[in-house]
Every structure is written in structure tokens, then in C-alpha cells.
Amino acid sequence: MRIVVLTGAGISAESGVPTFRDADGLWEGHRVEDVATPAAYDAQPAVVHQFYDARRAALAGVEPNPAHLALARLERAWGDDLLVVTQNIDDLHERAGSTRVLHMHGSLRSALCRACGSRVEWEGDLGHFPPCPACHRLELRPDVVWFGEIPYELDRIFGALERADLFVSVGTSGAVYPAAGFVQAAAAYGARTLELNLEPSEGSHFFDEARHGRAGELVPAWVDELLG
Ligand code: BV8
Image 1 (cartoon, rainbow, N blue to C red):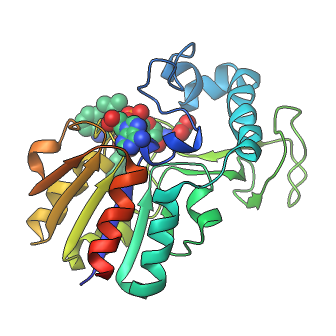
Image 2 (cartoon, rainbow, N blue to C red):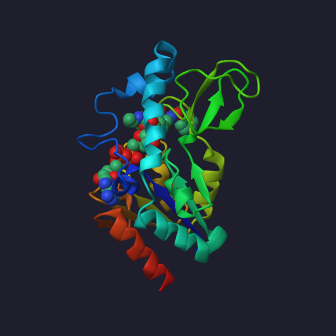
């Protein structure tokens, strides 16, 4: 059975990574358009870097939780028939042991040069505008997909949705497109669809089945069922 799992901020909430919609959510204090759009970066790159440098630094203080670990366990049993597509820019899936992960909105662990287009793994801050290792221009930006930009890996994602027998959505509010439309695409290709979320998402009615609760409990229980 080929499975595609879409994850959002809710899967990292129990690790201490703030979600976007929580009261103290990520956007709190920052208007989305002030930190997560190309226009914001052009207007005030230092503010945008401060936002992402803080999130990158915070990765050192968080660990994968049972939901991330359960998906890594499932991958060891399911192999290539499991693909994780994440909207998250944290590295908790990989640190849990998952290897088949597509970061459709980019990653905090990567920098993108606006001058030469090269990508480089990045640990520290970008706010001091370090030179690009390839072209030496001071044009490195966070390698994340901002609003109005085209998400990464869409061809591979839609290819996997087309072949999927089961589509599972974990910890996402279903508010941001094109990710929020994947459930309908998967269903149209004949896949069964399951939502695992703290509360009904905006697209909850599109799913065949929905289980509501904490990902740290729901995901391990679901994986145990599959691995029987
Ligand atoms: C694009 C990276 C063109 C940066 C992000 C159609 C209709 C309307 C609008 C649009 C549309 N199509 C496009 C748009 C515009 C826009 C959009 O969707 N706007 C929204 C606001 C209406 N989309 C875009 O601009 C996209 N680009 O469309 O390009 C295109 C597209 C396709 C093909 C060709 C051209 C680009 C969007 C990407 C933006 N970048 N992130 C960064 O992270 O800083 S989006 C960012 O916000 C996240 O990556 C994520 O995608 C989204 C947040 O959503 P969630 O992850 O779901 O988090 P949230 O806090 O909302 O919800 C958490 C959920 O978890 C909740 O339901 C909660 O109940 C639950 N939860 C909490 N705790 C737990 C839990 N669940 C379980 N256990 C728990 N413990």
C-alpha cells in the first residue's frame, strides 16, 4: 500500500516548535506579509533574517517527538512505499530517522543565493549577510518558500499523490495552498484519506476518516495499527 503523509506545524508542536495559529503562534507579533513574502525581504531583509535566524537557533533546543519517531519507524517497515511531504522548515523528521522527506516549503538548514541560485547547507545566522560560498555575493536568503512563491518538489508530490493508496494529513490547519488541496487531489486519484489533527482542519470534510487528538498519541497508534 503506497502511503503519502502530509505534515504541518502541529506535528512539531509537542517538541516545543510554535505553530502558526496558536495564541503565541509564530506569526504573533509579526504580520505574515512582514516576514514571509519576497516583498518583505526586499523592504527589510534584516527583520526577515532576524525572524528566521531565531527559528534556526531554536532548533538546537528541540527534539523529535513520538509522532516523528513513529513515522521513521514506519519508513523502516514500508520503505519506498512511504513518502513524507512536510510544510515544516524544521529538521525534526530527519533527526527522527526519516529519509524519504520532501520539504515543500523549504528548510531552515539551507541558504539560497539570490545572485547565483546555489543552495548551501547552513547552520548559523544569515542576518550578518555572509558571502555566498559559490559566487561570494552577499545575497544569501533563507531557503524557504514565501507566500506568492511556488512550493518545491510539486511534480514529485503530485506524482506520489497520483500513485497513493492512502493519504494521511497530520497536524495541519489546511489553511495554506497548494498543500491544503492535496487531500482532494489524492481522493480524486482514488486514495483513501485520513486526518490526524488536534481539531478539525479547514478541509476536514474532505477526508474519509478523521481522528482528533495529539499527534504524539495519534500517529504512534496509527503506525502500530499498520505494523499490526
Ligand atoms: C503559491 C514557509 C503559486 C515559511 C510557508 C488558493 C486559495 C487561496 C489562497 C491561495 C490559493 N493558492 C495560493 C494562495 C496564496 C497562499 C495561501 O495559501 N494563502 C493562504 C494564507 C490563504 N499560498 C501561497 O502563496 C503558496 N504559493 O500559491 O504559489 C503557485 C502554487 C502552485 C502552483 C503554482 C503556483 C506558498 C505558500 C507557502 C508559504 N510558506 N512556510 C515559514 O515557515 O516561515 S506556509 C506556513 O504556513 C507553513 O509552512 C504551513 O504551510 C502554513 C501553516 O499551516 P500549518 O502548518 O497547518 O500550521 P497551523 O499553525 O496553521 O496549524 C497547525 C494545526 O495543527 C492546527 O490545525 C492545530 O489544531 C494542529 N495542532 C496543534 N497542536 C497539535 C496539532 N495537531 C496534532 N497534535 C498537536 N499536538
